[in-house]
Each structure stands twice: as structure tokens, then as C-alpha cells.
Image 1 (cartoon, rainbow, N blue to C red):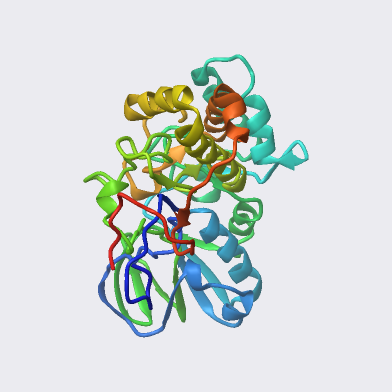
Image 2: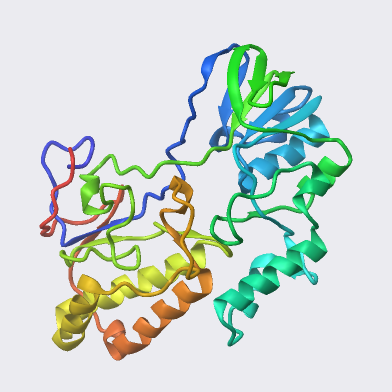
Length: 341
């Protein structure tokens, strides 16, 4: 039922495209902080950091970008992280790191060899963590999402960013860390990620009990032919939009096949029910919320491209029906899905 409508609407299908980077994940620490607290989601301008002693919690891409601004415009920039990560330069041989990784992913080499080459490349271009007074990661390369940064390590080397371990407690404006040190800060920014949330429907359609995607290639419901998701994945390299475009084209191809190409519809229906294609890095990820939707950009893209080619001409046939984009509008149709009111 759409908010503001007296009666429910019915649709032939539902595309869930509300994203999973909008519901902030807030950590809990003992004590109380009396200064300003923000989530990285709410940091829109470096003006919010100007003239303040800033503590950033977390070690992802947003965290290091905010720390860069804090190092330039804040009075003091302090960084707290529970664990260390591998820090990739944003540019490699003058090209964006994701472009470089995408090209090397095409090389006919075992993934263990590729990880070995990347590891040595990092040692040469970045160096060891101890040179920046950072703890070594507690995982192997690509077992957790690496962090892309260029200036973060430079700021540490020049003393513009002070690194700290996990927070132990807070009291007033004082933050105490697990190594016994303390910092007085004005602003705490939690760059601690997000939680997937689907407040408009029963999320058991999409997530299992562990919060992982139940969908085929994070896109198709394995039992229902009228429920889809777009953007529910986390690429370790590259952006979301190109992959979301492939998802949308696959969804359209399947919808058209359901209407006018029974042979392709039956093939894909059987495939999505049980298939578990290799669209990751081929190694187990750290069991954290950040990695529940992790995929390998190149392998995910190539797999979807193969499926689109197999659909063939059916993707160009007309379709007469109505599909609702989550939070969107459409004319009345039919649906087997029951949404929360």
C-alpha cells in the first residue's frame, strides 16, 4: 500500500532499488559523549569540520576522505579503527585503481597468483603498515574490502592525522582508546557503514537469517518470478552504476521472456532457482556486515553479460505489464507480493 492511498495497489512485479547505503550503522560505547556526533552519511561539506578537533571512527573510503578534509580544515584529525585494512592508491600508473584492476582481471592467471602480484605491488608503492605506525591487517589481501586513498597515508607520515585503536569509552569531550590514551575532541564522525533495510516489505524475501542475500546474483528471487533487486551488492573495485545497468537489462529480458518467450523463461527460471555462480574473489571474506554483499566487479559483469547474450532476441520483444520500482508509481496491475503498509 502506497503512503497516502486509502486502498492498496497491485502490480505485476516489484523491483527493489532502495539501496543498502542509507540506514546508518551506529556503534555503542560505554559512557557518554557531550560533543557533536555525526554519521558519515550526514557529512555534506568540509565546512562542518572547520576549526574542530575531529575524531573519525572506521577505515573505509568515506572515513579516509573525511579525514583528508579534517587534516586540512580541522584543528586536529584523529582516526580510530578496530582493525587495519589494505590501503590502495587511487591511481596506479596514472590510471584509476579500479580501471587497472579491471584490466588485470582479464589476465589468464590463477587468482592466487594475482593476489600475490597485487600484494607485492602494494609493498612497492605503499610500503609496510608499520612505517605509518599502523597495525598490520588481520586478514589476507581481498579477504576484506580494501580502502582506496591517496592522501591519507601522506597525512599520517606528516603528522596531520593521529591514528588510534578502537574506542574503549567516552566521558564528556574525552574519548579513551583501548591502548589507554585519550583525546579531547569536538566532533565524532562514525564512518561505520550501513545496515540493509527494507521497511516497506518483509525482508525475509531478500535476506536470510544471517543478513545475506538470498537472491540469485543479488538480483532475482529464486522462487518468485515477480520480485527483483537492483544495487544490492558491494564491489571491492569499481562503481555500482555499470553493474546496476546490467542487472536492469537482465530483469527486463526475463520479464519479456515470461510474456513471450517460454523457452528462455523456463531456462532462466531453472537457473535462478539453484545456481551459485562464481562472482566473487574466490576467497572467503571476513564475516562482517560490510562483506555480506561483496562481489568481484569484472566477474559479476562478465557473468551477467553472458546471460544477456543467451537471452538473445527475446530482450528486444515488447512487454505489456506493470512493474513497481520500490517507492515509485505505476498503473494498476497484479502482484503476488504483499508489501508492508
